[in-house]
Length: 130
Image (cartoon, rainbow, N blue to C red; front, side, top):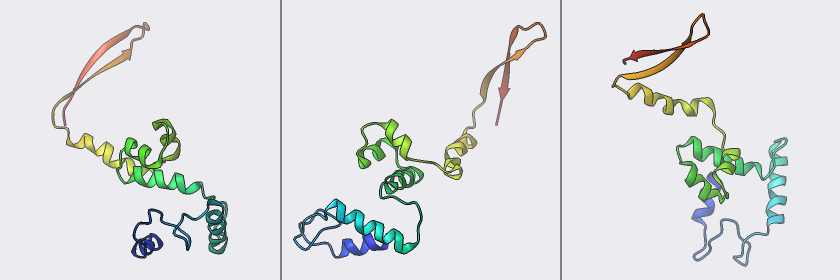
């Protein structure tokens, strides 16, 4: 992030790209990959591909609370299904979603079925209050 912030400070007027050459044109992809691979090797990171950054991008956005449709548009995925293949939750990131249940104050009625000895399901209504 520090590198990107520094690049932003040094950004030339009228240049839309983060990484550009001395002619203010975008860096060619093969040169970007070459530089990325050299940085990964220098950092001593094993088994990291440039494409893995796409997974990280989607995952960090989703974990930060960005909606799946916004992530789809930002990453230019064709479908939400593809975003779901890229974005991964860690268990702790799901906690706020389940904590919504703590805020529910009205009674909840749950229909449960219990198997009777004769094999017939008998409906059972249980009133749960918070």
